[in-house]
Image (cartoon, rainbow over all chains, first blue to last red; front, side):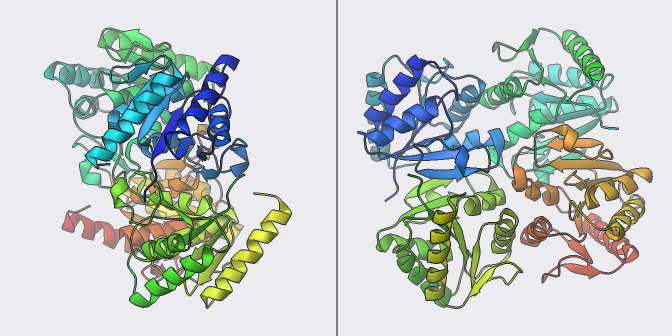
Length: 158
Length: 158
Length: 158
Length: 158
């Protein structure tokens, strides 16, 4: 059966505080969904993968380049696209729900793509663009993900 | 010699007022640059191509799909990418300067890409993200383009 | 730890004979590798996914379009790229080893990409281009995959 | 009016003999079509651009990377895609007719894409795959291009 995927977007460099937030988010997420996707690099992506995997989940890293070794050490399934920033589309499009962590312009482009595609995007202290679901804590984020995944099951639609 | 390109981003549907703004911008732009690129479809893209071509410029349309006939009637050079929204990266990356007209999420993703790449982006009543050059009139936009193209020549860099 | 992936390329329509070959290949492959990737659609892709999953493996489908429902029913992890035929690059680049089943031009483009990237490509009654590893039976193909995956482990390189 | 485009595919390194062939082809082509597209790099691409431009044509280079300075000195319109080898799709899809010069796997992937899309592809001492139009001289190639462009006008189709 098709696996549900939650994608995490956010900066490839981040403060220690955001890193802990990402790690914590990863751990908690593993209790509500089997698979996590992200851009596969460092910063928030690495921290969230580490947390998610520590709690038993499987991680997907969709890389901008061709070199699998660019993936952080906590990525299980490496998809090297060689498409540069155009891979941002793929990171969000494979997801049932997206969570945005603090990040810069790459994150903003991904938030915009979510809203254009109609993919629910939860902003955890990240960009505040009309249409995002704003939350302040990991717990709130997890609750929202839970609700959205259940709703999706009920709608039985893509 | 490599031709300078100005790319226009903006909605594929727009009000009549924005349409006139786009047409006017196209006409004026043709006096300061030889080539204009855009997403090649309708709305602001069509209006700006029409104005630019009426004033003697050559237009490039970088399409999301594979069908050349999706290009509006004022595109001279059709690049059908078949890459969907990932083509937004190409629309801005080929430009020396980008001008954003009013638009929704597609435009926002393109603004974000400009800022990430370091391509100067002029916002003519469009998205107000930190780093964009805000202007209110076509004349101001043209002045900014002129200055940026001259600066670029002096810097002699990509 | 990063999972090994074998990608299967081949036609999206095929004879019943090739379908059985693909199904059989999928079943046997699941004994030597955890994950299988492919273009995610019908024909050889569907048959090989069905066999691989029946034998306990996990399947990845990298789709040309944006609609997850285009994936065949035996794909576990759906990556909808919206990149059209450019997604062929991704199908082969994520693999440690590629196996080509009979197919037309899409398959040929993928074989060519493998050879360009230096990814080992086993041709099971498929295209005969200089550089491919030609085999005639599923058993030979599995043996080759096994040898290549072990060699890769020893080389410890990407 | 939409401009006709002929795309040239071929190796980014080549013998002196092929280089002269490419240059000669470029010069002659400029008499039958306004625009030439190619991958924008060195080897056959550079030689054909040089010849085409010397004879008054306008050249488009669709680059794999993001750096405009990777384009050879005879490219007028630089489209930096950052998509790596996936840009091969774009090189052929923008063309009304494609001519293949000698080349390796990149060229083969492009020939395969032409045949898949149904774009006429003339092989000038290049890959011999079922469906290509084989020719031995520049003159034959030009005659074929001429015939195909006229036919296309008559069909008035994309």
